[in-house]
Length: 256
Length: 371
Image (tube, rainbow over all chains, first blue to last red):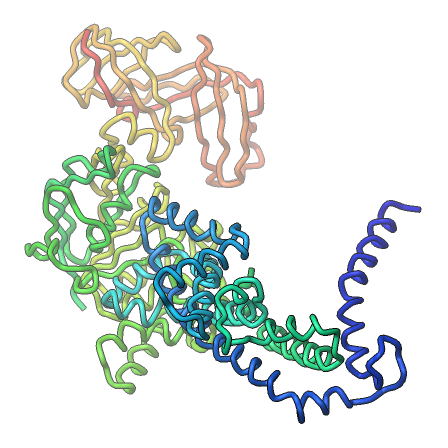
């Protein structure tokens, strides 16, 4: 066998291994019985999801609320940070790169525990708000890096050109820097949203009794045995993600 | 639109400990095409950015029509810049790029359209108005940045190596276009380049810079024909630089110089020297004539004749570059221009024995070391 064929086979097997569990979830969401063997096609779990699973939808709504709000705030802060790094001196840029990179390497569990300690020390009641704060915190390094990557595609001379052509600093920011950064800003928003929607570890620490998000809900349901309803909602989530990534193809290259 | 005169008065600039501009003074006349010429790192771009307002000075002043502009931010100066990498706004079309400064000035839509159309016509880009910068070629991008910089009707246009990113042929075309544009808009152009051929081909005046100092200021002709020092002689065009000792003062105008490399020749006495001084003589390769037969110097001024062997032949089409090894082993560059094709001409080949001849006026002193 040629070495080229071997690497190809290994790659195909690895991809299969990666996609197989996902395919199983999709297939079994259409299974007619609860048992883990195929008994025939049915939409009963989807029916159950849409008619008698209000508690799931409440947690889904919580996830959406936290996802949208934390992504917006994270993108605004990340964009401002990226612009200040882009315009800043070399030294400032170096310091900022390092301080933004470090959070990528800190394990989620440590971020979760430290945020929990932080909130309890300040006597903040755990709620959707604390989840929102936590999500802004962990997604901001990502949004900042994505916007910065976009800005670095362009030479700083476009800003000097704007000044030269009569723009004040604030006009240059509104008419040149932000529009140029926009593809990165959009990519950053969806990155932050994705991170927020599926975060479990950090959310687990900072969620209060009445602020369950969808991943937490799914986890607690799994503890009592796998319900095919979970397969159904997972399939829908997957569809949503695929749809989003296709729609955002042109921004994908800025997503890390 | 009339241009302005620019005066640079004793400007000093430091980047940290690095003294970029050392007491630089220059007078740039209104409406002229002025070039700042020098190798990279000589401070020419920094000087341009100081005029644009993108850099501060540490000392000195910059005047526009005799009024200081140092207190004005870049957006308030009647000066616009062409950046080396074009600096077009990537999110705006060609039309909107050119309209950018006009929109900031709150012109009416019809006035903006009238002006942008005029500028698009000026740089011949009418049919590209709706394209994005990423869809344009390098030359087209540079023409957009020209139109955009002229939209504000500046008094002075600053050009930072505007053609250096283009290929040689396009560079020539754009240079001619720039020259025509200068004639049409009639404002002051300050052109920064490291390419001596560009600078001397289109400028009214040239300032040659080296290590933060203006080493020579003059017309392109003056700078080429009488370089102020060895640096200029080497930087502008090509030259043979030879070190020798003054052996005899022949007259007020001529001296005899003994070179260890090829004997005694007569040189022009453009600097005060006395016998025994060591001098550095420059001789442009195209001023030397090359022939097979020993020439007889014409009457009046005695010519310089040197004997040698062709060491290297570089055929360029329009000219041939010969490297001649003199009897003493010195290599002298000689460029022979091909004016007409002669069937009966005996072509000078590698290893041929040749005689070189030049007018003493063409070998002159660039530096003197007193002994």
